[in-house]
Amino acid sequence: MNFILEAFSPADAVAIVQTGQRLRLIRPPYRQSNAIELPNSAIQDAVINHDFHVCGRQFENWETIIAFLNQQLADYRQKHGHPVAETLDSLEILEVAPLEVLQGFLDNVENQLIPQGQLEHANNFLFALLESGASKANPDLTIKAGKLLKQISQAEACKKNTALVFESQYNPFKSLVQKNKTEMANQAADYIKQQHGFFGFAAQAS
Image (tube, rainbow, N blue to C red; front, side, top):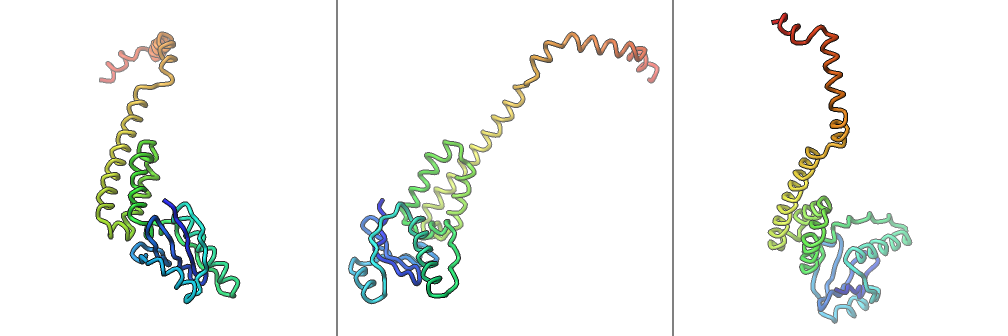
């Protein structure tokens, strides 16, 4: 999917973004619930009446758009003698990303991260999604994220069991023990003799 930043206001980091056939107005803190769908005429109105800058630049994803807007806002405030805005958390992308993009994220978790064993990364993303407003606005995302968390839990249990089995079956000293088995038995016998007989001592103690 192409992400085209049609126009933006550097003074407040508000932007008009084209995603597929949709034109959206986004603003800090960049939550999905704050994104407003606009008609195509809104671009001209924003530039003429609201001091938006025409852009037309393409971006790979929401994260790069937000990073660009953050930098533009910081540069504007610094130029005008205002404090530089704090950097926004990249997880806020979840709040503004369209439903189809979030579904794509979940597909990547299911088809790539989990099969590749990147369980911690997948787990962190899913919990972030569940805590975001996006999951509350889209119950289907919550259901799928819950199912994927269950898959991760099962994968972690399987991984742990495999490690335990491997540890119990593999002994790096096994061949050494077999090789020196007779010698160790002889040493044990000599030790018992030196102690005047272990079994005799045990009998006296009883």
